[in-house]
Amino acid sequence: MDESPKGKKCKGMEGLITEGSEMIEEDPGNEELDAGLISAAQRVEHYEIAGYGCVRTYARLLGEEDAVSLLEQTLEEEKEADQKLTSLAEQINLQAGDSDDDEEEDGDRRAVKVSSGPQRGKAGKGRNR
Image (cartoon, rainbow, N blue to C red):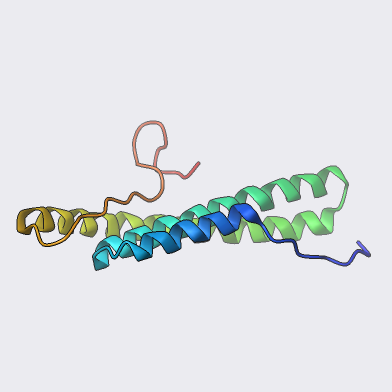
């Protein structure tokens, strides 16, 4: 498009990264830390999906079909990453939940409850929205 791409610091993304870092500082157990990091990564992915989706739509409206194709490819990669994180979260959150039960019985540590991605049910049918 004969334009030089220039980066600009994204305050929204910076906030998501800060939230993830703060969670690490809370010193959760291993499973809770994994669940929290997956949750933070999914929020980043969702932010990226929204951005690429909007830019792809703008490119389509401007008739920039080469850009549309590249942006669609990137958007699909981000969606695949989100799906992988959802699969991991389904396993890790169960482990973290089991760990919370053990910690509550032992009273050794403070439990950190973390959720990642949408819950499966009638409304979501297991898909991220």
